[in-house]
Length: 132
Image (cartoon, one colour):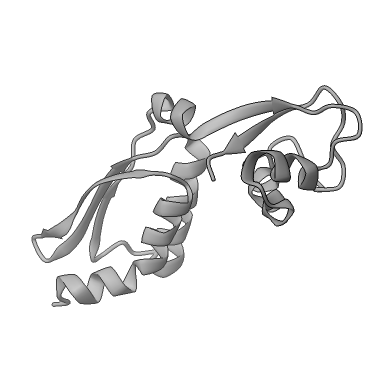
């Protein structure tokens, strides 16, 4: 049977996704020989990203108990919106919100449901801006 530290190391990439997607992690401990992860996701997209990484590491889920319900109230704290203006680029918007043009992929990834190319945004589009 794996130890807490071994399982935590095994699932470190999941913990990284949890942090990146601003999922609130409430519990991380051993229960009945399995690693227990419980938290609250700010969106379905965030919860899916966590589950995708869990399944990538261990599709059988035989050493993990996980629960990540969605609480939209968390999204308002971690995500703003911005309406694209004429002349905007994701890099320019990134500079405005993050102080760095190179963080434009954060905005692109948060808006994959409406953007297929980071170079193709249009005035009037409403974009989600994830927290820095």
